[in-house]
Amino acid sequence: MSWLWTSADMVTVMGGRPLGNLPEGVTGISIDSRSIGSGEAFFAIKGDRTDGHDFATMAVANGAALLVVAEGKLPAMGRVTVPMIVVEDVLVALGRLAVASRQRSRAKIVAVTGSVGKTTTKEMLRNLLAPSGKVHCAVASFNNHWGVPLTLARMPADTQFGVFEIGMNHPNEIRPLVKMVRPHVAMITTIAPAHLGNFKNLEEIAAAKAEIFEGVEAGGAVILNRDNKQFGFLESRAQEVGIQNILTFGQHAKADFRLADFEGGAEGSTIWAVVNGETMEVHIGAPGRHIAENAMAALGVVALFGADLEAAKQALAGLRAVKGRGERHRLGIGEGHLTLIDESYNANPASMRAAIALLAATPPEVTGRRIAVLGDMLEMGAFAAKVHEELAGPLLAAGIEHVWLAGTEMAALRDALPDSVAVEYRPTTAELVDHVVKNVRPGDVLMVKSSLGIGFGKIISALIDNYPALPDRERHL
Image (tube, rainbow, N blue to C red; front, side, top):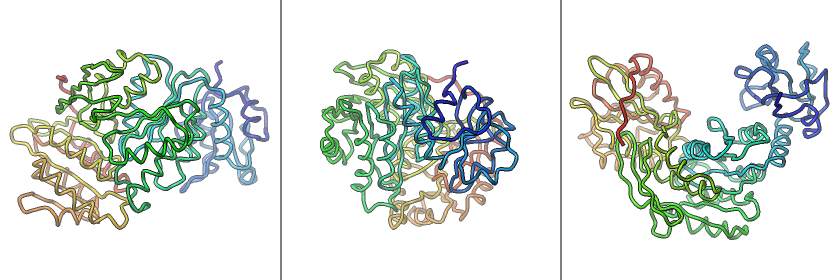
């Protein structure tokens, strides 16, 4: 049996107290009692809304071989008989295991942050590096104070490439996480207005993202967006912490990994990429200029790691948009179909503009409409009204004539749009769900986007539940 961790190593690393007859080892680590696999260790983390200790019995029923629990919770756990490692604090113990995982690893590690595109770029890197070796990568958006250590602790010892996503919505959140990850390459996709309610301006956001430089391994590199207005600031911050290998991507003439040309389509794009001085024609299976720009950064990582560039180029052709981040659905309606672009995972002003551009590049059928279905962008603070009403500009420039809105803040966009745009506004997501399901027509293209907390995933689910999924048409790139 190949163990992820032996129980003895876990006890030593975490400074825990064994209780019961521990198994020789565990095959995996989970913090979710519902999806835990047989033979895995369940870490009973206390979250903002739930306490893992309350679900220990369920974890055991679902196959947990070992529980990691807090000393203070032990008296309340009753007759749970599965073996345990008892620690003072479960999240701290997970962090210790994460640090030990990084210490034992010989993998080449890349860490990704940025205001937009972190998860998409992380998934891109997973696919581009896979032909060159065993890749370990975060699932979903595990990029916070528990997601990063969990991903690290799950990394098998024989991993060759590790891909980590690190997020933040306040200062001093990236710093401790990147010091666990210790990447050989750190990437910042871009700096844009996100979590503005927690920052005074873009410079403060850039400073928080720049914390990722502090964990880069000696002799490591950073990859920065040469087209971003914060590039000079980020370059200076990297130099201040002693990083000499500063590389760039983008359309700028001086970019090391340069997007020389872009030809976009509804289903994908073709780019001309300059990497290591050579120009390559590359097909990308997901649409959007923002995807192409992040592909340049990902190709840069492949080049820095000495991985197979030609295989990475082929992998880009098979790329598909991530769920909630541009994933497309063809749904049957009447005698025809509608196209649904799922951008429901999250939203800020930059990603809203990118999603509107995707909608503009997707032609409806003859009688169909392009419809932007938009919900509030959260964490905008005092800037909320301004950034919502400013979406009127890109919508008008893209020629979007149908806009369906929900949420308190989207009232500002409703009021900013002229009479030439057919606007439907509902105060709540639930009310808009009903409108969308009843008013879509054959040939329509809908792009659905909001911050996660607004719950626009319900619109996606309702459309998929009410209209049958059709197979994708053959893609022509």
